[in-house]
Image (cartoon, rainbow, N blue to C red; front, top):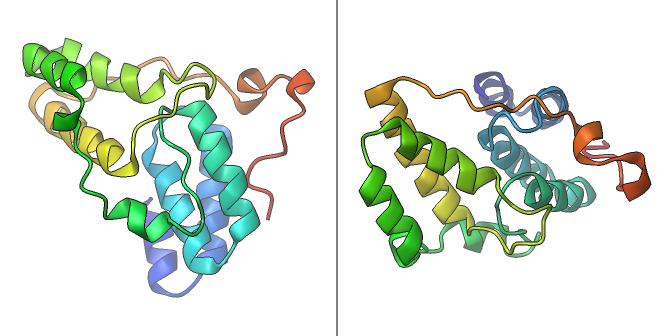
Length: 166
């Protein structure tokens, strides 16, 4: 992420996109942040086809609502909040300050039932990531099992398009 940010600051959007795409291909379920940053890079660079492939793959990999090209900027500014999702908010309150809270946040970000869920709005995902960062700061980072590769997530029979083609 830091390297991509530096590249972006120098106007090297293609390099930033390649760096993030390489990381995601190697660590598809490691973290949602690189995916979100790559969406932003694709949008800034006008790479619509890549953006649309990535948002579909993101929805299948994480519990994130698909984002349309035209609505990307508006979606980021939406006032959606974890507090509006009563059962999630209550569960976080019940577990707050424990490793179980970390596990829960990781679980709800990743449990997407193969893209059949609508997913969380981008602002909710960013709020969950903030809460997770707070928990990680207090408790130390929790490392979930994220060793699946893209091939394992998308068997050849699925005939999904190759992600992040540039």
